[in-house]
Length: 121
Image 1 (spheres, one colour):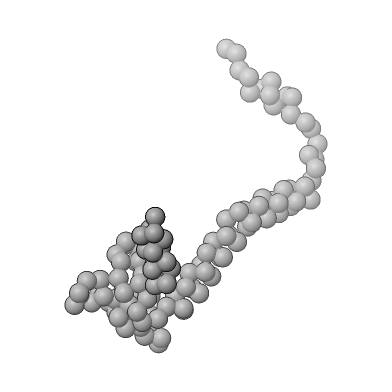
Image 2 (spheres, one colour):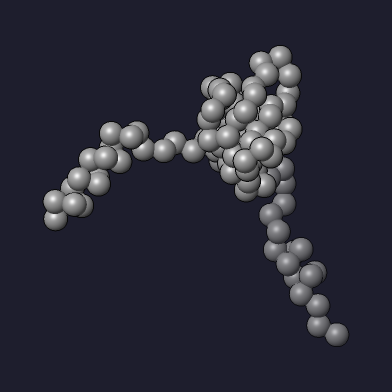
């Protein structure tokens, strides 16, 4: 029976193979690449999310992580939740960290300018 494993084993280099220092450099470079591609971007994303949550105030239009759109009815600085109005007279308690985005609408002046431009055409 023909086997390739003994032939490959015989072809492998004999000796130290570079030692422990080359392995340390290899693992260090792998960790550096992992840090730059995975860990650091995630840290930046978490920091931006925390800044967004700290800048929330009553009346802001938000989108939750589950996709609900609502308006902040009551914001508590000392608690980890807030009250959000998702429909007329429908208020729910929402954890602050579940806010996915703050809806930034155009200022009223820009909306009126767009209307007048379309009417003039």
